[in-house]
Image (cartoon, rainbow, N blue to C red; front, top):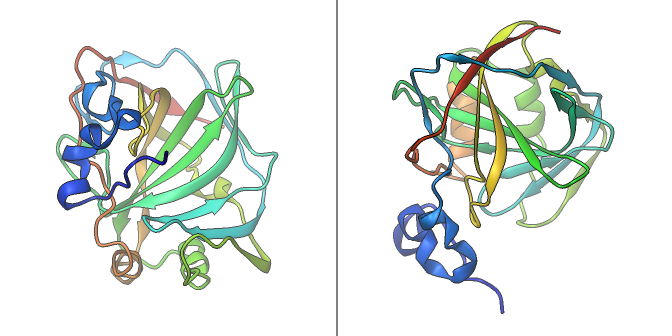
Length: 230
């Protein structure tokens, strides 16, 4: 039997996810949930990060809750000695993670999986400024129908362009930010935001007015900090 559908508002919104059905119970009962407010990180991250992303065909899906881009095989994030392959990225608005309570306009999640099926997600915050050419390429090809994968012929994307040459980052262990809110996800949050225009934010929010789970208690978790250098 399929689980009860969820949303970002009303009776099926985030505060009710854990009670919708047994498959979503961890959304309410979990103690290591995401997103969180990043504040007071003091311990250095013990592992080196390596981003190795290559171009992918542009494959977009309107999931009904966000825009998702499925990525071609071969791109990866390495945390220490563990390799995670990039599967897809998608968007939230406003940002799910916050810095000292500050919310950004949007957030991208690059979702990766290791050979033993463990997940790692890189979060890139998005702040209003100038037009972003890569984001505009996505918006120019937005699928109008929900659930239909749209492969855009002759168009590629490379998320390596979104990784600054040097940036501070934060790391912690959390969960998926959508049901079933499974825990054990390795989170990397880049401190340098991506710049997009206000019009580009409005293009997304016109379709998805709100697509963010509120921040969750940190409990006894440690947020690590580090600096990425190629």
